[in-house]
Image (cartoon, rainbow, N blue to C red; front, side):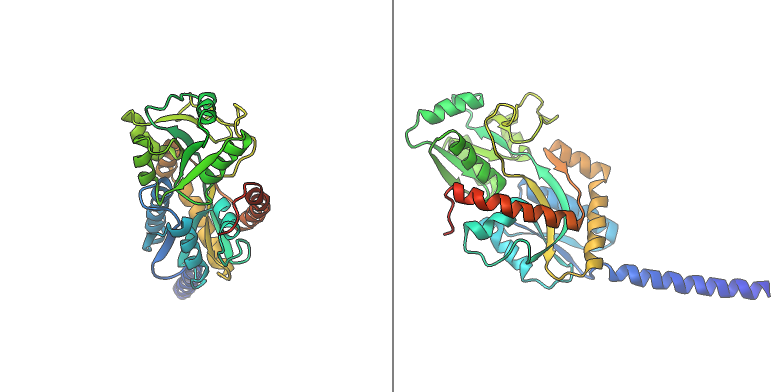
Length: 324
């Protein structure tokens, strides 16, 4: 009798475990998960997305790939995710500022709040003001003096239309009543090619992009746009502490799914992205690159993107960045 009870218990346990496995599987999409990145290959956003993809793929036992779609400042990639099936297999990696700004900057038919389901926060990205190696400017005050000496202003590079770096470059010019010519690039490395050869006067770029050029003495960094100094470059001042950037476009990046993606899938993906951000090796790699990991619930992200839209709308108007 005891043996029979034990066998029944084992059968019941096996059935329960099988059912649990099916329920867990239903929380995740089957097949390949694609992270659509609105930035060119090789830049910090691409590199960071691939680090997350590797960790997620290993933990989930699924194939997670990165697809770069930088056209239109990433707006083409955003539209492709908006129009994708809401099954959790197609996700967008994009900064909150750009997601909120693109419909205001260009005639792009999406609503940042209604057409995307927030999934997970990824990171805050520091941007550094970089100048050519032969620039006479070694500090922000010296850069502003150089700027004032040029009647037509500086030629400033940007690797993403509507990106935080783009906004903050324009904000810097307006805060100091200086003219600016923005030069848009499809990727950080074409931008750096022109910066090191002095075809442009300044750019706001990530540290991982600037680092090899700094080490080769081909560029100089003058400041960064974070709230505090970064441990990787403790001698580099922030623009805020020197009162050179009175308002600032935020640099947070997140993962977005098409609107209508099932809650169970969203919550499972959120927990997996958070777990990935806590992987020691991934966190260390990001910290070394000037990337600060960030976590948030889907609802917290929804509130963030709503606030971002309200922040960006008057900013776009005040900067004169009208839709094309």
